[in-house]
Length: 371
Ligand SMILES: *[C@@H]1O[C@H](CO)[C@@H](O)[C@H](O)[C@H]1NC(C)=O
Ligand SMILES: *[C@@H]1O[C@H](CO)[C@@H](O)[C@H](O)[C@H]1NC(C)=O
Ligand SMILES: *[C@@H]1O[C@H](CO)[C@@H](O)[C@H](O)[C@H]1NC(C)=O
Ligand SMILES: *[C@@H]1O[C@H](CO)[C@@H](O)[C@H](O)[C@H]1NC(C)=O
Ligand SMILES: *[C@@H]1O[C@H](CO)[C@@H](O)[C@H](O)[C@H]1NC(C)=O
Ligand SMILES: *[C@@H]1O[C@H](CO)[C@@H](O)[C@H](O)[C@H]1NC(C)=O
Ligand SMILES: *[C@@H]1O[C@H](CO)[C@@H](O)[C@H](O)[C@H]1NC(C)=O
Ligand SMILES: *[C@@H]1O[C@H](CO)[C@@H](O)[C@H](O)[C@H]1NC(C)=O
Ligand SMILES: *[C@@H]1O[C@H](CO)[C@@H](O)[C@H](O)[C@H]1NC(C)=O
Ligand SMILES: *[C@@H]1O[C@H](CO)[C@@H](O)[C@H](O)[C@H]1NC(C)=O
Ligand SMILES: *[C@@H]1O[C@H](CO)[C@@H](O)[C@H](O)[C@H]1NC(C)=O
Ligand SMILES: *[C@@H]1O[C@H](CO)[C@@H](O)[C@H](O)[C@H]1NC(C)=O
Image: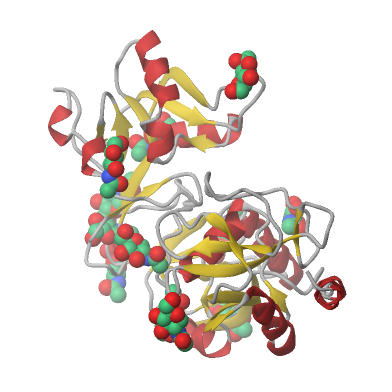
């Protein structure tokens, strides 16, 4: 690689505080949900969407600084004609329908159909209030386990809280739920039904994204109050959510998207120049949330891959983000990791949005941070 390019890359480390994927704004004006939506789409990107608990903490920081202790709209509503969609409980795991994992005729006599998913030999939907065993997911500890079968029967909501408190979440995604580890576990134990992290609801985010995080305050929220179809965060109940009639006027949260997909075909180097010239920099992905935020946009690109700000070094032999973040989180395709000169990383636009190393002179769309 040319030294001028090395210098350019090194000069770019301006991003430390300015480069964020999105930013929340609290708007202390009373508006109906739809007026609030219009306001956010005009001034920012859209009404706030929430990926996981970290986002709730971000919001609560804003809320604390405004002294407002009431209710505020977020971008979730139930005006969907009752069309329920399946989600995995673990944030960032996308639900992809695969008929061969399900057996709807496989319910036992005492299992009623419902809106939560359980695993026996296959998946089936079951009534969420039924107490049964469940499977939690955790990060790999030293005994190579990621899944834990809990043999205290609980209903789905309790099971989810238990897993989120003691581990990370209910087991989520077909890799976990149909994988060898769960099969081994169930072989050793009784093959009875166990909850996994599947639920279906008819709530949708205002910007159309499929984020699965829900933070309902179960003491206040009632999913059958059919004229309360817009969601709010209750600022005096640690931010938990409930619903209200959309016409009521409340303050609200918007979000500002800081990532842009540039739908022009450029080499990696051209892309870097372009981002630094017109925006801030090429985008870094340092955790699962970033990955999820960016991958939804990748679906919209006109090329099969999209450049990221990840580059194989100027001579030292390792991968680094041009914004200087540490390369800890990785999402390489298993075949895509071989190192090599003049290589940079690009995310697949479709499939599982894995990263591949590609020669710099490929012409792809790319992601920039914007102000
Ligand atoms: C919004 O409405 C509440 C309750 O009606 C009121 O207490 C508050 O002052 C209003 N806020 C603004 C900014 O108008
Ligand atoms: C917000 O304020 C509450 C109590 O006033 C405090 O417990 C909480 O930690 C604060 N949250 C943040 C993110 O600062
Ligand atoms: C929280 O605020 C609501 C008004 O939005 C009020 O009705 C309720 O009593 C408050 N709850 C607590 C615990 O302060
Ligand atoms: C949300 O929509 C579903 C399906 O139409 C309905 O069963 C449920 O009662 C609604 N929930 C609320 C809070 O309106
Ligand atoms: C569905 O799952 C089966 C086995 O788990 C797998 O072989 C197949 O490729 C999957 N189909 C799709 C469309 O993902
Ligand atoms: C789950 O159990 C808890 C505690 O017994 C109860 O408060 C809650 O309503 C139950 N949830 C469902 C969906 O049945
Ligand atoms: C965990 O897996 C690694 C690699 O697959 C293996 O080398 C190691 O022996 C395993 N440890 C245990 C406790 O099974
Ligand atoms: C949300 O999921 C639906 C159904 O799986 C899919 O058609 C849609 O493209 C997804 N939306 C986004 C923004 O990924
Ligand atoms: C939820 O609301 C419906 C309709 O208003 C009511 O019939 C039902 O009893 C409520 N459920 C709870 C748990 O409050
Ligand atoms: C919504 O339902 C409640 C109770 O069922 C009722 O008091 C209220 O008037 C209804 N609101 C609208 C806008 O229909
Ligand atoms: C995809 O691109 C179209 C046309 O540029 C735009 O209208 C749409 O909002 C984009 N969708 C996403 C999810 O960015
Ligand atoms: C970029 O390349 C793709 C094929 O890889 C092509 O379909 C698309 O039209 C090109 N876009 C532009 C703006 O040249």
